[in-house]
Every structure is written in C-alpha cells, then in structure tokens.
Amino acid sequence: MRLHGSLTSPYVRKCLVLLRETGQIDSVEFVLTGGTPLDSSAMPLAQNPLGKIPVLERPEGPALYDSRVITQYLDHRAGAGLYPEAPHRWDVLTLEATADGMLDAAVTMLYEDRIRPEGTSLASLKDAWWAKIARSIDALEARWIGHLAGPMTMGQIAVGCTLGFLDFRHDARNWRADAPALSDWYAGFAERPSMQATVPPSG
Ligand SMILES: N[C@@H](CCC(=O)N[C@@H](CS)C(=O)NCC(=O)O)C(=O)O
View 1 (cartoon, rainbow, N blue to C red):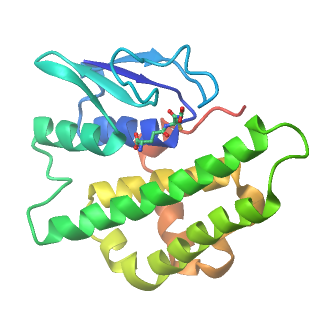
View 2 (cartoon, protein in one colour):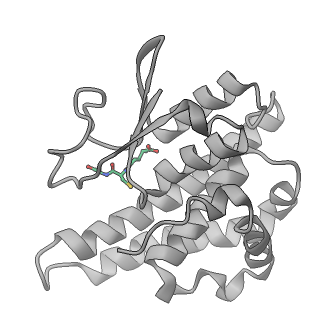
C-alpha cells in the first residue's frame, strides 16, 4: 500500500497513528507530498480529484480517500475493532466526526492566515471558526471523557490528533483553559509511542 501525505497534516496523522496502533506501519510506503487549495500541483490528483491528502493506494481496488474511509479500511484489514459494532459504533463515529470537524475549522483558520494576502484576512471569520472548536472542546469535556478513558477506539485517535494540531498551529488560543479533564486525558494519550512517533515537525 502507498499512503500519500505530509507529516504536518493532522488527517494524515490519524492514519499513521492507526497504522502504528494496529501493527501495520510496515505494510505502507509513505509518499511525501503536500499542497493547499491554491496549489494542488503536487497532490495525488489522479487518485483523488479533490486534491486532498491523505490518499491510500491499495492493491485490490481504487485508491481510498478521506481519512475516515482510510481508517475504516485499515481497521477492517487488521481486524482491530477500533470501530466497534453498533450501538457503540455510533458513538465512535460521532466522536470522530467531532474531531474532524474541529480540524476542518482549524485548517481553514490556518489557510486564512497563510494564503490570504496580507491584511485581507477576516478576524471575525477566524473567531467564528474558533467558536466551533471551542464549543466542541466544551462538549468533549462535558460528555466524552468517559469514552476517552475507555478502551482504544478511532474516536480517541481522532481527538488525540486534533488536540495535537491545536497545540501545533493554534497554541495561542489555549484550548486547555477550561478543559482540565480533557487536558489530563490528552497528556496521557500524547505519550503513546504511536503519538510520539508522529509528532509533526516544526514549520
Ligand atoms: N476530510 C478530509 C480532509 C483532508 C484535508 O483537508 N487535508 C488537507 C491537508 S491537512 C489538504 O489536503 N488540503 C489541501 C486542499 O484542501 O486543497 C479528510 O479527512 O481526509
């Protein structure tokens, strides 16, 4: 298999953490690439017309994309049970959707800063994106700590990668301020070898 991605993409990190947690990391060749909505020239466009990473090429069929499709495929391949059977499955999928939605907002904020010409970035829009993240942090703190503290699921991996990205790109927003239980959980989760091995390089 070939996984197209960058080492700073949190969506790619979800796949890499899952590959490590399920003992499949040596089954995948990593193809380093990257881009932005303004420059898709190095993206695996033949495999994913959306021009986004991650993309997984697999031997038995067309390439897979969107991280949530790739992680379900890899979990199924390993029989790892990170997506358990219903009804617990619905919790895991909702938790992963929450984490991915936070990432969508966090990545959009980054593009606002990096792609828009100097002085044209809308502060109110960035605050509106951050409000989605802040509400989700509150929800994780209020409703999801029990799930996070339980057996490993893809929901935990997704939340771990998202909080890691907030530290990496939006540290100044201080997501920990009103989330002591989530902070404690993440401090432990971030020590896992799979997380340590995938810490994004600065830049
Ligand atoms: N929903 C997608 C999001 C993937 C995504 O937005 N990846 C970013 C990198 S962090 C990307 O490829 N951006 C380039 C673009 O949007 O054109 C997933 O979960 O895989």
